[in-house]
Length: 278
Image 1 (tube, rainbow, N blue to C red):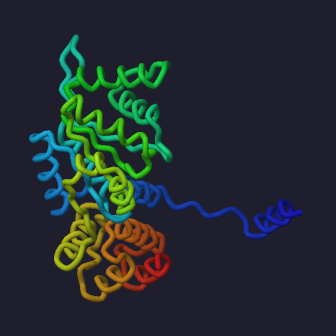
Image 2 (cartoon, rainbow, N blue to C red):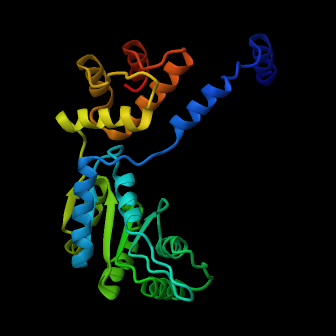
Image 3 (cartoon, helix red, strand yellow):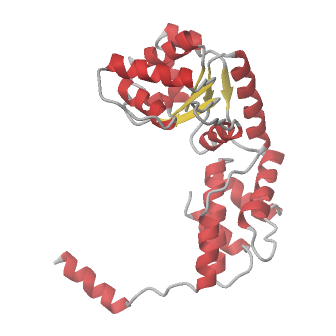
């Protein structure tokens, strides 16, 4: 009955009108992910570089939607692997995202597969040994574990061993929930005391981020003047300074503006989109 009703409504309304080829191309462009360098990202990279050189483990903590993931992964991308014929690749920095309720095998698998080695079957001890050998052969200096609060309590001991036995700087990345988890185990906490807080944007940093997004991401035919006070006020209220929300709102506002036949984001369209994120 419900399916028939849905078909009836669809037939009454007809097919959705497809955008023109030009508009589809612009929408595709605006949906492409692009790394944007902000001041706070540069500061984090410098901090991580110091920890890598000193082989010191640490943690990066911040609320969701602050851009921690992109910032940490882009640091990995700046440390490019070196490949010589007939030799294992030299991979200075490994970055992994782990699944929910991550156990030891899940962690070892993520590391091995990131380094493009084949995952083998076996006991936890055998797979751990393979991961250690892979990390050594690739001369890994830093292992970044994102969403680290997903690690099972017992798996933190495995992470601690990577630091202790291989002299690799391990970086745990997560929200404040991560702090609460690791502080339950004094041995884990003592190894990851150094902490960098990756925060929200405000003031000039927020204005600079908006200007960068308009110039480097949106690239609309006509400037939208998004740093004008009226535009800034809407964005500040809707995003709270979270870079992830800013990215979503601006991309969607740009697409919606183009679909209206506009060449820029106007205040009305920005308000319209921002209102949906409250």
